[in-house]
Image 1 (spheres, rainbow, N blue to C red):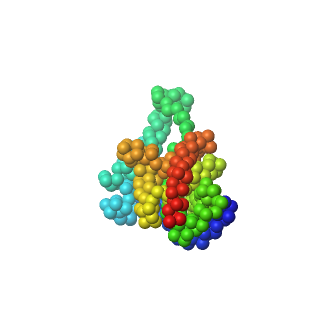
Image 2 (image 1 turned 45 degrees about the vertical axis):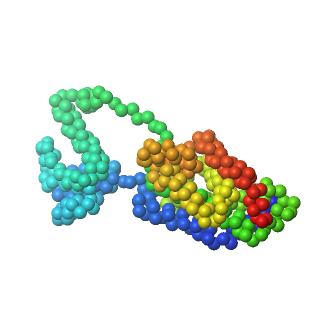
Image 3 (image 1 turned 90 degrees about the horizontal axis):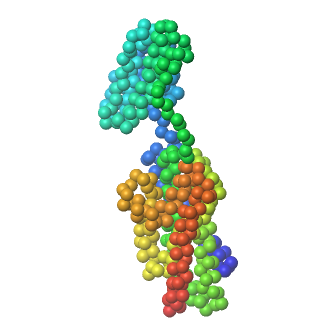
Length: 380
């Protein structure tokens, strides 16, 4: 059995087709998806374009306060028309204009009308900007009321109590539920391309069948189970190496936070057993390499679509989510996201890893049952 394992490892190292398809292709897909969908790992800062027509200490203080929350990008007053044209072209969602005389009106207690030019077709982007600006302006309003109450004879503490809201929000921290596209695309592409190992596996078995090696093995004392395990283990190791390299690429190139490494390693082990186990069973069911390639495409691409590898499952229709629960891709992606994005540990993902192992064991069982017939067909 050890000789079979060593033989398969050497063949896999020399297989340039598998190296390209299982290692370089997922890297290309990660880079492509990350570039198209803005997956630099940045959390999506809110940008506010501003034209300050006043240019005073008061207007600068307002922009500084806004800059603590948003990415403030200032333009010169002469560029106002250009900024508005950019909104019309769809390049900006909003531009804030601080009018001249802002500081003078503030000092005199007069109301100041700042203008927020906005794209009506980009309300999803404008709404957070409006909410932040309203919050900042409310602070100015409360300060104005507090000063008025103090002038009327109240102490500072009394004015603060008068202005205090009768309802308070208690912030309760829960586990992180952030979403970064890199958190989605790196594990998604990794899981998807793991299942393409099935093409390589089927090809190896049919090559041995064509070469007559299986006929010679059948005439030796090698037990079918030992042959099966000897052929299977190198592919498991290859998938583990594949996943390790792809997650390392995501971490070092895109800053992907890997979370609990022991939990991540457990999922990778379960995923490698699931993918290669199904591949082993498939190799002994399909009639040839062409059929193996077609079925692999169906399993890999179909599982990617319904298993939430391209987009989060909760964004898909409910019936698609229900179908996804019957695929190993769903459980692999679900557990990987728990570790990477939500800080899960080994105890949190143990259940989903057992489900992955069940898929792998089912494939191994099919392979073990079909192996004698496959060996007999090789002898004919």
